[in-house]
Amino acid sequence: MAQDPFERLKGDVFGTRATAELIAAGGLGNPAHGIIEKMEQDRRRFDALLGARPDYFAEAARGHAAFNDLLQKRPTIFEDIARSQEQFAKFAATGGLAAAQERLTTIDTALAHTRSFAAGLAGQQAFERLAGARTAIPDHVVDALAGTGALSPLIERLSNPASDVGRRFTVQMEGMSRLIAAATGAFPSRADLAARFPQVVPALRLPTGAEIAGVDLAAASGLTGVSRDWATATAVEIAAIDTPWVRADRPELSIGGYAAFKGMSELVARTAPAAARTTQLVRAELGDYRGDDPEAEPVADPMLASGLRLAHGFDVRLASLPLALAAAIFAPFGMVAAAPDADPDQLDDMIAHILRQLERKLRAFIDARMTAAIGPRWIKQRVNKTVRDKWLAAQEADRAAGRPVGTLIDYADFGEYRSIIEQGDNWRDAFQAVFVVKTAVGETLARLSAIRNPSAHVRPMSTEDLLTLRVEGRRLYVWMGEVVP
Image (tube, rainbow, N blue to C red; front, side, top):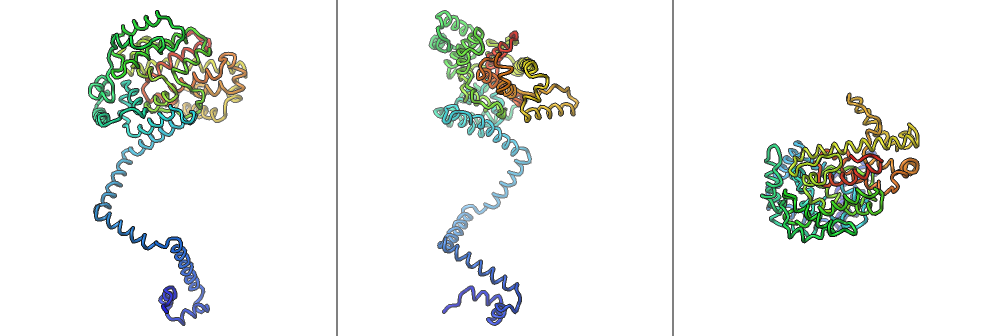
């Protein structure tokens, strides 16, 4: 009968049978006992393994054969891995890894905003598609398109599952990426990009009379009881614009956008800001923010910021309007109408200045209302400690750096203004008499927050920013009892 291999192994380790018996009797001390016990434990584990996986050795043989096959097909696999590791190390050392991680963090932050959306909402699904595509679009391409006001068509295409993102589009995207990356100084103009890459950047042109007549301007306005004279006057205004402004691929989108914004602006100008009719039309055109979280992290990426607005319901017709033209025709309060071909940096500065004015007025208004209702210590008594500590830290940072130090409320943002106003006791004691409808003012502040959030200065201003500012800024001035500039 064959000897148990385990017993044979013990004999090989400890010599003769007599030596093994001596060890078993304790003659060679306890350490040997421990070795034998460990061997016996290992055998039991191995037996259990074979019981659970009886084909273990056959699987190992197949794995070995597959590895040998791989080595035959790719004899330089280990050298390839070493080169990949070296390239990754260079990528990380030049900041590429950090930039990629930052982009993914930005996308995750943007997606967090959609968690308040209704499950399965079309806007949420569209934004998720856009966020997935964003990882493949180089930052310099996004920055260039944002700077030239040409992001909207790309967002529309990437968000829509029915859009054709074919070979021509991909080739033109790659060509545009190379052109922009090689550019020195300013980005190529929109007209230049449209001439070279029409699949990505539609050209702008003047509308034809037939195209203007083909859009129901009264219906596009969103107003009820619009007269024929209003539609006729609007058509004349549109025909009088002498700077190319409608998208060549979808002229009806831009024409309808003009009528929609004109109708909304006129309604806001002649009705109370909290009126149900006003609130509903503004919500339909600028997006539904009733479930938006005031404390949500801001989104700085220009593509994701615009995409998030569209996911909330911002009218794509409005987004199709060129920024310079919108600034020339729909200049917000306190802004001198810009030329249709105004420099984007100049427009950025003008819009930012208007925002600062509006924010100073709102800050002073909140402070005055809360001081009158609660007293001079209202920040300590009625502001969340986490928010208060954040303001204190920002104030101390200014002090330590030798910068001018403001009061605590100076360090708040629109999201925090909204939280203060909507807080139950603050609303009851200080703000309900002014704003009347909490959801209406909450949405106004949420829309403005998308312009003035703490990191928004890193992206260029957009058409959505300017049009939102014109409507919601005006409503806020009227609510506060201020003269609209």
